[in-house]
Structure formats: C-alpha cells, structure tokens
Image (cartoon, rainbow over all chains, first blue to last red; front, side, top):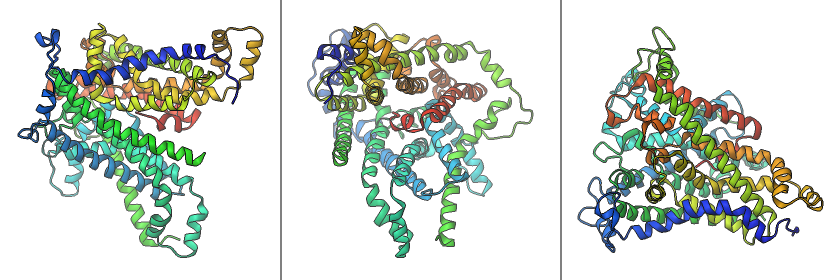
Length: 300
Length: 274
C-alpha cells in the first residue's frame, strides 16, 4: 500500500463536486420517485400545490387486471417492450453481432473493414439522424420498397402496418456494433492453437464453434446480454421513428413513461411507472456488476 | 481448410449484412445535393448546394447548430472532465476506503436512473430549481448522468501518473491545490481529453434531455431543432432542410470519432457509450 498523498479530509474535498452532482441528479431522483408515486402530484392546478397522498392508488391503477392489457395501458406496453427487447437486443444485436464476429474471426481485408465501419457508423451517428434515415428508408416510397419492387415483391407501408417490427429492425441496426466489437475482441484473445488443434483432429465448423469458441465466450455473452437488455429496455429513440404509434402499437415502456409523465404531466402515476422501470433496471444492473466483479476476482 | 459450401454460406451472410447496414444510409448520400428531393432514393438530375443554402438561411437551424449545441456540448465537456478529474485525483491519492466499491455503486446508480423514467423526477427537480428552459439546467443534468463513467475512465489515467512528482512538489512546499493544478493535472491530460471528447459527443447527440427541459425554439440544440423539421405531428417534413442539416450536424461527431480512434484506439470511445 502506497502512502497517501492527500489526507482523508483533503481527498473528500476533491470529491465534493462530484458527490454533489451525484446526490442531486442520481440519488435524489431515485428516492424522490418512490415518495412521489404515492401522491397525485401534477405540474399545474390544485394537485401541484397540494398533492394528496393517495397510497397505493397509482399502482392499483397500473395493475388493474380489467384494463391493463388494453392498448395504451402498462401491461400492453410491457408486453410490447418484452418483444422489442427479445427481438432487437437478444436475437438482433447479440445474434448478428456474434455472427459477424465469428464470420470475420482471424480474417482481414476490405470486406471486414466495410462491414465494421458501417456498423460503427450506425452506432455513433446522432439519434435524430438515424431515426430520420429509417423514416425515409421505411416510407412507402422509400429505399426498402424500391428494393422489394426491383426483385418483384409487393411494397408495404412498414411504419403503419408493422410498427413493432420496424422499431425492432431499426434498433438491431442501431446497436449491433457494441456486441460485434465485444465478441470480436473476445475471439481475438482466444489462442489460435486451440482452433488449430481442432482442425488437426478434423472437427467440423459447427463443432468448433460449439465446443471451443462458445464455452470461451460464455462470460462475454452474459455481460453483453445484460448490458444490451438494460439499454434496449430504456431506449427512447424509437419515439423518433414512430412516436409510439400508430394507435399505441409501438408504445414501448420508455415512450409510455414519457407520455404519462412528461406530456400529460401526471407525475404521480408516471412516478409509479418509473419505480417499476427502475426496479427492473436495478435487477439487471446488479446481475451485471455481480458477474463482472466475480470475473475480475477470478483473474486476480 | 474451408470447403466450397462454407465459403458460399459465409459470403452470402456477409453480403446480406453489408446490405442491411448500408441501405438505410443510401438516401443521405444523394438527398443533400438534390433540390427536388423526396423520400425515395434518386440520383439528382441537377445536383446543387441549394439545400445547404436553405439551411444557412434558416436562423433557428443555424442558431441550434452553431450556438445552442456548442454551448451545451462545451458546457458538458468542461464540467464533466473537470469534476471527474478532481474526483479521480481525490480517489487515487487519498485514503478513502472501498474506492472500487464506491465507483461500482456510482455506475450502478447511473445505469438505473436513466432514460425517461429518470426524467420524471429530474424534470420536477429542475422545475423546482427554476432552471427549466435554461441551458444551465440541461448541462447540469448531463454532467450528473455522465460523471460515474467519466470518473471510472479517468481513474486509470490518474493512477498511471507517477507520484514522485507530487512528492517532490510537496517537499518543495506546494499546497495540494497547487500540486493538482501545476503537476498532476497537466500529466493526466490524455485522460482529460478522452473524457472531454466522450462527454462532448454524448452531449452533442443527446435528444431526450433538451427535448424535455427546453421549451423556447431559440434555445433548442441541433438535435431537437432537427426533430422539429420532421416531427410527425407537425405534418409534412421539411425534407430539403433535413437532408442538408443532417450532414452538417453529423460531421463533427464523425470527425471527433476519427480523431479519438486515431489517437487512442476504439476502446475508450466504445466500451462505455450509453
């Protein structure tokens, strides 16, 4: 243990600005929504000045078994979100990312550079720009329909008839780069001799993938799945493409929370939704930190 | 050795993937230079810079890009890197127990208090502080969200600065703040730069926070101004504006990405993107 340059008091002084920010913008919001979720607080009107304590009313409204699977209600929104996460994060981003990483494993060349550059470009461009790119792409006159017609298939009104599929494809395109980069750097750390040995004894490609690469990647896959689930669960970007519609058919939970809390300013009800969302986040983030800390301990 | 079948399967897969990634961007290659632009991809009959001229003539668009986005981006960049540098220094050189646990808890909080769920209480907080519809409010909220990851990146850089310089300065009678300002801070410049650029790129692209906290059109950054040009509720998108504006707005992000990729490799930029 090296001797400390700063006394404990001084080092706390250096930490103070950061602690103020964290307390104000991360810790306080986290705890204040619990309290707000038991009130009927609104932005304007009588309930803004004198919010009433309504107990569990907000939660009972959200989980009202009669209504909650109706379009535009929370159960329906959670169901859409589950399909969105499974489709775009778990199957789309992780599956495609793994596929690209394996296809280009131990290979160089122009095609690899092209695919990596395009995937990374899709990932780093600003939200509003990629959302509009897809808005144009999926338009009845857009590029996708032009291509379909060129090969003799029927054009579709994608955003109107298949809004959920549209945002799933969009989010897959948007976020695959992360999984792709994570898996390809993981694969690069596997000693080539493992695969060469398998080649010598005549293993098939699928066997090599299943028996050598997959077990070595298991830790990375767990990390990747948790992180992209967390991000996809919270992403608001599909709002820029569909606005949650038409008629709530792409109303994922982030858009639902926005509608209730920040468009109609029903803070009490929105806080109850936010509590549920943050509790789900807390579970996902805890699993992630648990996995990554136990892996660090293994290495150490 | 790969068999012919394997080669075919891999080639088909790779071509399909490349098509999937490139086709949504095709529109942006031609549209900015096409004065008769529609949502279909067409090669311009008479390519011109007329769309760019229209953006330059739109005062809201230009103010968003050159003023509001710059204020918010620079504010978040300076604030995040300075506060994170101070904190990382305090954590690295002090004797605070459980430092790695502290950083883990901070990162845990920042990944839980995120997205629209966090904007409900944050909107109310900013409203109560009287900072609604101000750039200050937007910048403060951004710094709060970026800090935990910023401290996490920064601490590696601080740890790699040798302590002997500081000990020499201490023997020479410098105060802790002088040591930080004149000795440690200059030698951790690469870390400050990485965190600063990372914060700038995040703030430049951010949509949700300014969309919710700002109301006046003349205060909106480019991200939100861009959205108002095609907002589905406002009717017809102003396609000519959108096409050219997208190029001007995206260019800085691409350039910064290339810079950071060239100087430091991709890891720093990518690993902890939100």
